[in-house]
Image (cartoon, rainbow, N blue to C red; front, top):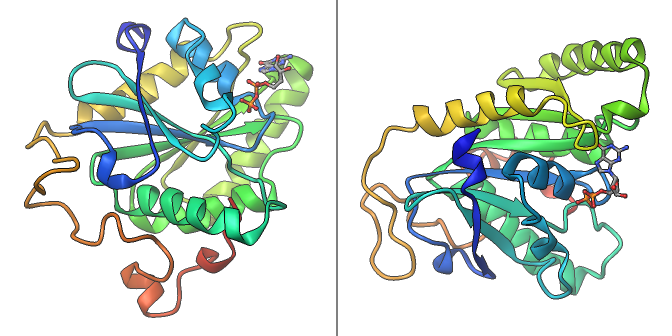
Length: 240
Ligand code: GDP
């Protein structure tokens, strides 16, 4: 938990080339109003995530430093399917490129409202991200809105349904309001960061790390090996 408590806003980027040098990072994604900002704030013990709600920053990737080399990354703007294609396309390019190509990304925290879990968009995100082989941890937020029994029932249902198509995924109940589930979430996410072997720091704008995928900042559409083979589920219809 203590590592999260040291989080501080680092920078917002509109291009992967501007992403900071990093050894390990965890990205948070979730539809608007699911409680992602509240979850980030609860985990870090501060009001960090207001940054991602600042007008103009909703189409940027926001980095919060945990220490010199590790980050929490807030990905806003997920689920704004109604914005015009001209606005959406560059954001999809940035978000998709980040999720699929960013080498230090060690896992994804996917935030869902416990009362409306596994939306079609969430399922597409899971199907699309899972081929990266990186783990996903689902936070079923606002668990306080349901009785303990009802929340447990949703948890079991979501675990069962996700297991069928996104095996490297764990699920938990979470409430920012009641501060419940914080320790469990922190344990999973810190576990990912700790498990990331401290290798060479990935170069940002200038100079590339030899392990870095050369296509890293060239967008995400149909660029993965799977997409090349034309069998990447959901890739073309991911609306962000
Ligand atoms: P975001 O748009 O996903 O970042 O969602 P926010 O964190 O801004 O939360 C959206 C609304 O849900 C706000 O009114 C929050 O106060 C409320 N909210 C967030 N988390 C919880 C929670 O755990 N319990 C309850 N009851 N309300 C929550």
